[in-house]
Length: 286
Image (cartoon, rainbow, N blue to C red; front, side, top):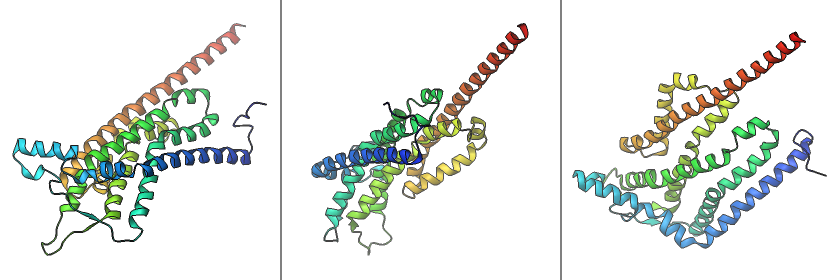
């Protein structure tokens, strides 16, 4: 027998189906996490701890720009701080945590694909066609957001928070867990925020959002964007402005996406109305 359709499956069968999607997703995350755990030196030395070093690509670009405009303050992370560990099992637990985070990021496209497979049978044929690129675009935007957060926001945050001082009498000793938490939270938050166009697409499809609504509340959205930028960046104007530009761009793209969805829906309704009118004309002729 073939696989049952979504309408024929009982509630318990749906749960069983969801369970296997979750199991496969978790297995994918664990596989990538194990790989990340094995390549500890590369993950920590070349990725996690790299943004605090002067040789990091973003730091070198800012320092080159600082020399060009003769503003030394723009040269960030020129004096890297020391990261310390104060707990017996601290480094081991951080190693496991980072491996899981890397596993989640690397497995995100597959995890999203598994959830897409679970919800796909419940969609109509035209909805499947419209959302056929959901896995690709969602994965692309998420990874793009993670890279944006890692290469731009993280170095700025590390420079500001690591060098900030209330008094020369106070010596900063940056804890490993605190540093890791800053880097991972900023990168993941950026990845989620970059999903805005995808969220607007589906909200428009279900009728909760329209392009007119997005245009009307454009000014309010800027306030929200500034708030998000203040949350995921250090409290300095330069970093917040750097984050606001791509978020405003994504918002404008979301308006265009919402407009295209509404346009397609209106065209489909017009086509259906035309077909109904033709059917009525044929009946009257008969």
